[in-house]
Image (cartoon, rainbow over the protein chains, first blue to last red):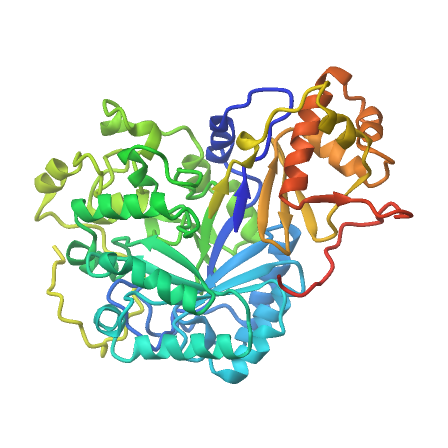
Length: 387
Length: 125
């Protein structure tokens, strides 16, 4: 999605005004992630939602349709559907077709395993539908090391199907790690080959990513490299996820703020509402779509969301000249590595988090919850880091 | 999400700017694929075809945009909304941005004022 900040009329003309309005929260989210299932055929080592096994309390088809109806009433113009692997749900097409024919556009993320020719043809016949294929390495070896053996081939096969049926421009989505950051140009070539748009997002220490973040997140030098690359490629989508890098200088395109509970939130497969897709933890659970008043009441009235819309203090970042640029970074990243929410981002480009991280090394960090990992899932040999 | 501050790149229209008077005379309509969502600051405009989201950053511009459908020209809509003429250039500027992002389009000759704002299904761009 593209956002035009637009022109204010007749009063203050500063962009900050809009950002302030965003911080105070909108009447409904503009970027809502809806994870349809915790079931997944893969076991990616950095999965934000620790997916694997289906949750028996998963929303039924009727409940999912009711959620769509409510989103339509709230004029949530589109949702980002994910999981788990959303295509595993038997009613996946029913839910997506209902949404896209009821003024709730869908962008869904898939690992591609179930995207065969028949599915591609069905997608090609639908309006208001965007598809995002996840690949975390431009080559099979780099990708499969985090997403599992055969996952690169599955994603490529899915893209071939989309290309064959002339679906149009879909998206290729990658999470930047220290192993794929040198492959960004190769990714762009891959996207160009398929007529796809490239979307790069930030690795968060959430879900199973809490266990692997220390091995996978880009180094300081790589962060600079990534920043320079993004500045040079303004057409690459980022989901506004690298605003902590704006402290390097020129701001990256985007709102450059943490949207959690303000413009962004997550509905999980059992209907629980969290502040953002990266904080699936009781502390950031605002309520459930199953509660009286449904999603709308959670969004407007939950104590958690109301507190996130209060002005926040720069805390430990107050004395840093870059706070206006990076806003202290990502709440979820701080939380899961054990920092306070007003501490610097663990990947602070000024290195301001390093002494704090050193000071808390060895202490217990919050355990992402709930965990739907399959017990049988083979642990990929990155080495355990859980403290 | 991607944000483009397209307005910043446009010259600021003024009373003497011929583009402003042309724009004020033109008949415009909200694209049928656009929905407006009221917000405390004004409204969000979402284009279902291009997936663009724009911010209408004052209740007055929302009123004017809503009035365009039943107005013969932009200046007609501004008058009907009671907008002081001194403020017209800034409204012209905001409307130019909305044309640029595809939210507004020229009204066809003989266009009836729209009854509702239900987006039409159209093939994906």
